[in-house]
Amino acid sequence: MALSAFRVSSQRDYSRLDCRVTPDGRCFFIEINANPQLGLDKASFAVSGKCAGMEVGEVVLAMIRDEPLPYGPSPLVAGL
Image (cartoon, rainbow, N blue to C red; front, side, top):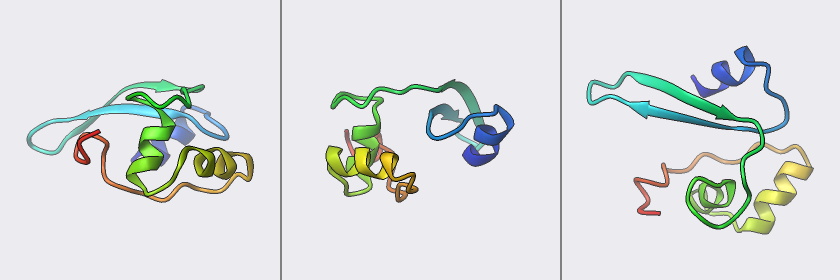
């Protein structure tokens, strides 16, 4: 679903899609941030990378190399 929203909104390279999921499982996209931060605080690519078992430098290298990031649990589920 996130890839569809990424393509429909004409994003390229990378972006962050924020969504909310209702208790019955429906997903609503709130916003698309075409230039998300790489910092170490919440709502950053670094936090998402950490959930997928990657360090900040690995996330940046993957972006430079245009490699897909592995999927991991939600930062909220991971307690970050």
